[in-house]
Image (cartoon, rainbow, N blue to C red; front, side, top):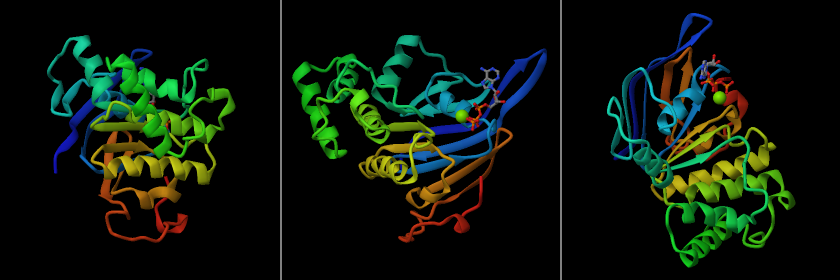
Length: 247
Ligand SMILES: Nc1ncnc2c1ncn2[C@@H]1O[C@H](COP(=O)(O)OP(=O)(O)OP(=O)(O)O)[C@@H](O)[C@H]1O
Ligand SMILES: [Mg+2]
């Protein structure tokens, strides 16, 4: 399987009050095309830092990082090349949807295509097609303020998919949603994985681990467990809290 993300023995050290803290300490992780991977671990364990490095938004101090065939570290690339990679190869989803408040749902998705240089008509078709697939066909013309939190987050997923990325990085995308709506968002990401996108999701929600092919646990900047999720094991039943270890 083709790896869309390879993080190999990555370290990241921050200085705080003269003290050096290794937030990532030799962490390794790969995500293959078509794979949906959960990243879990206690608060402060380095999950968001790892995602920023995977998204070419931060650089490690040691190790190697390759995204969609481009080696980001230790190689150096001009900021313009990194911007192009982020725009074309990576889709980001965060805890909050962060939609542009004065643009409609469709326009928010179109914007991602415009920024990548797509013609207006093509962008419009792509936005309509994605939002319809994600169950928002009736909401194309709605402003974010008229959408529920779950609907806004679905628009954010559509925006992340607009440029057909190789990799999606999602940092607690369901944290602001209730269980059912959170699961819906993860199911959309799962759908993207089924079309060949590699998906890495930071999540605290053990109830949805059945959707993941692999579950990776991080503690104190080290990967402490990297195992098959129950989706990979072919289990179709929903995983309950008692089935999985607590984060
Ligand atoms: N730019 C920075 N400068 C200094 N310290 C930082 C910086 N970014 C993160 N840290 C520290 O690194 C540690 C890991 O942070 P990170 O945000 O990666 O944790 P996390 O696993 O995402 O936690 P949470 O579950 O709370 O979101 C924390 O102790 C944080 O304070
Ligand atoms: Mg975090």
